[in-house]
Image (tube, rainbow, N blue to C red; front, side, top):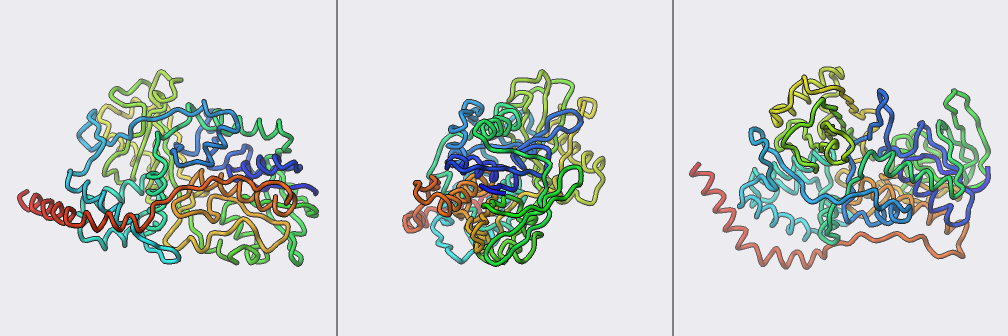
Length: 471
């Protein structure tokens, strides 16, 4: 085996393969599943193309959006204008904000307070940060926590406050409309990406699962790969390898490998959580729904949804693509029981929806394919792209990144970082691989603003307390 082999055909591996091929190196991409894309991809289930879940492209996804432009598919994304919020009993009236004005003002002050923090190696949970701020009302805290669960699957006590700070800073420094695909990701993103890879000479092989590695000294010596027919083949490594597999799979490859990561064995400390998807195909177009994202405020399972039947413009009926933030609560239930609970929950928000409307259901709890969620202090465990093995590089959304950078942007960034690690080893005469920096907010500037607004925040907190006592 010569050149560079990228193991793992998710977005991180695809980005690494694309960028390394641009360095003029031969590249082979191996993926265990039948399609590329990983969590950014799609699968055919019951004859229908189903996304892993609904994906968005915020303006601060700088490396991801630049990749989309390089692939020539920027037109495959459309801008969204609003994020709608729906409370039980209020359909078809949607809100842009759900907490009272005083609570919202305190929330904004809390954001400034969070931006004033300098965490560095120190970290805490989002829950601990929120509960330590006496000026925050219970309504403001509940709204923040529910919104975060709906987008990340992680409860606030399992979320890094430093990471939440980083994502807020990124949104503030890179404002702009959120984009989303015009259809399923396979057709509008991953499929065209694969075509570009193969057109540029990347050898793509699906149905190839890495099951074992052999390390000798400071090099990866051999890979054992199982084909989709069950045949296992061991081959010597004569070139370089980028491992772009989930962190749990990386840990399973053994201590000879994980001990060579930087930091050693850190990947064993990382955790992931399932982020569920429920797709409902209806027999009619449900009236009153917008064509943008909807958050169901107070939803016990933290459901957000979008009617892609409207948004994609390719269906005459409604297709409700729902993200289930608290899908882990349903882990012990049968699929039928879990679907009933979720649909009944939807009906409390959407009274127009009935069981007779539902033609087809696709439920994907993703218990076997969880979503990486950076927890408090996890930054010190996330591995660098370069390892102590001279011919091994790492990519994946769990890899080292600035606080708050996760999801697709983290995956793309890690693919670029792995390609840069390969460049330093094999093409040092070439310029560095471009990795765009995500902007931050100066903690000292935020502290100054926090101090200036402290009397105002105290007055608002007092007003909020008096208002609740009168009720």
